[in-house]
Structure formats: C-alpha cells, structure tokens
Length: 291
View 1 (cartoon, one colour):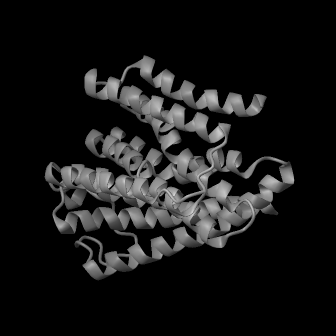
View 2: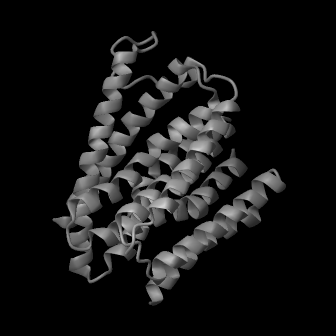
C-alpha cells in the first residue's frame, strides 16, 4: 500500500509541476521576458518547486526521520541535475547545531545576483506560438488572460504541495519497511521523481531545436537547487551530513565542473562528458548498494 501511495504522490507532484510550469511559461511571455530568462529563471524555478517543497514539508511536519528526508532531497536534487540530467540532455543534443544563518543569507544573495544577471541578458521574448496551450484556457486560438494563468499557477502549486506532503509520509514508511536510511532513499528516489519535469522539458526542447531553453532549464534549476533549498536547510536543520550526503555533494560538484568544461570551454556536447555524467550517478548507486 505504501508503494502505491508513493507512486500516487509522484503522479500528483508531476501533474502539479506540469500545470505550474505551463503557467510560468505563459507568465514569462506576458511579462516580456527573454527566452534565456524564462528558461533559466521562471521555468527552472517552476520545475524545481517539487524538490524544493519536499524538504520544507518534511521539516515543518517534524516526523521522526523527516530531517534526513529533507537533507537528502536538498542535496540529491543538484546532484542528480549535475550528473544524470546533464547526461540525458547531452544525449538528446547528440541525437537531435548552531543555525548557519549567515551562510544561508549568502546562498540567497548569490541566487538573487544570478537572477539579476540572467534577466539582464535574457535574450528575445518567447513567441506565443512556441508555448504549449494553457491547460485551463477555454479560448483556444487566443492568448490566455492573466487571471487564468494565475489560477492555473495556484492549482499547480497546490497539487505540488499536497503531493510533496504525501510523498514525505510514504517515503518514511517505505524506508522503515525495507530497513533503509531515509536519507539514502530520499537522495536517490526523491530527485528521480521530482526532477522529471526538467529532464522531460529539456529533452523535448532539444528535439525542437530550443537548446537555450533546454540548457537554461537544467542549469537554472541547478543554480536554484544549489542555493535556495540549501539556505533553507542550513537555517532550519542541524545539517548533519553522513557519508552518503557528502559523497553526493562531491559528485554533484564534479558534475558541475564537468559541465563548465564541456559547455563553456569546449562549447559542445561530446560522448566523453556524457558518459562521465552518467558514471558519476552510477558511482553513487554502486556505493549505496555495496555499503
């Protein structure tokens, strides 16, 4: 039963993320934001909402083991994005105790600086015809009104919050039933489910030739997940990292450095970095399996 409810929570989270992201894209168009800003900020924040809300809901709930779930989800998200998600985008491109308040503030300010710089160089405004129809719009052929976009935004966010709450509860039950540490399970399972919007969006954007949106979605989510949720975790948890969390952090940083080398210095996707991204993720899975 716990497994069924866990799968159901995945579906609710992803459905909410789909509604939320679609509304965010239309909001970007209405606000006149460039494609780069829409992909790197609005779409990235939208698709990052599930994995952001899971640790928040876990900490607020206060159940036994909830801090482990929160830390695992916080660290696991950028780890997954910097390894397997980058590998998937590369394949697509080739085919077609004290509270750490001061440090938390630094992370928030760093993200604010990133948003400012991204909005300044956001590029051309995304055309309406390149955005999927708003799901709640009942006037096809016309641009959806701002009120409908706002309603879908709220509905999507509500589904994400509800799904995140259900996910946390069932994740703790599953971890207890199979005798696995909640942190380990949330490090792998939570990001695999909640990062699906980024991976799916990026795959289809690359397929449609929208590389800037695809990479913007992944890299923007990486920046968001590496700053805002970590700031939240530093401020509201003991931030007691075990060996699994530390390893995933090291592998995630390695994946980010690899992305900088491949995309910034080399300027293209190549088979070697793609295999290395996948290898970094596989390294963590093997380590967990052998421990």
